Length: 93
Image 1 (cartoon, one colour):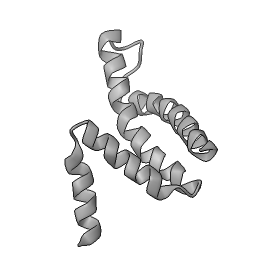
Image 2: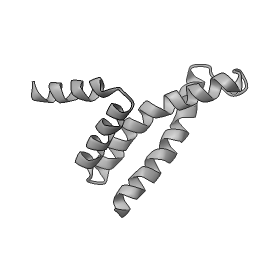
Image 3: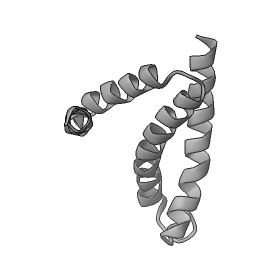
């Protein structure tokens, strides 16, 4: 359980940290955009970054299967299950 909690902590912090430079590279900063637009965009950028990092960092800590299944479950909960279905079909092909 400790490893899983550590992975979640590292992933959340890293996703938040990396999302700002991603937005900045697109020319989007808090100074150039209305806060009502900036924060939803920031959250939309964090979501895919978080999912990729969760599986990557989970793999580094030896928990690939747990975090892969967790991300797929999260995608289905967000009504984006077609993404996990696509990955599963690619694996079987």
